[in-house]
Image (cartoon, rainbow, N blue to C red):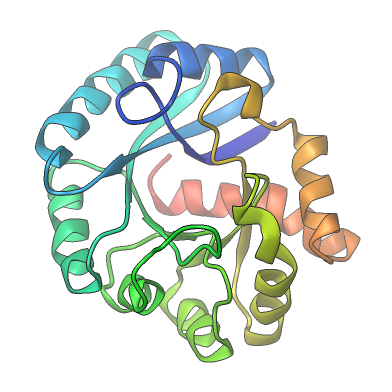
Length: 219
């Protein structure tokens, strides 16, 4: 069953409320879903408690596991560590950083700050990540994302290449903003294969690595 660790709800710029997104993911064959809404200092303190309440409702009454998370987005790199620690203190199960995608003006230095702070689980769509930083991700246990999101996916092949060369672990996520963006397990595997992974590597990215991260997070 599918494990998806990067999505957005109506609490930030997604299309539906958290419980509805969880139900739609469950109906599509997902075993676990992380909602990682966009946060910065303006909304972290209000958004995360709301998401925690939704996760409590889902996890008590539905078959899917819902992880409350955040995606730290377009922050000054010097703020990333502090915001990640604050998110964790407020109860975020998963901390994602919006990486240096080639299609958005993410501040230079974001990837490095995310990999250095010790509180980030996943670096999303990291763009033209250097080999040096890929090596740092591997040593820090930070997962790197292959994405199906249009635009962000332009550098999937590069990310896959440097990750394999430097011993990093990869995940395939949808970065879903609407329920229709959610991937089946087969669709996720096609993303991995399209990025240049061999069959065994693709299986790790869509099945083994997500479940490994879930276990690390206590889910």
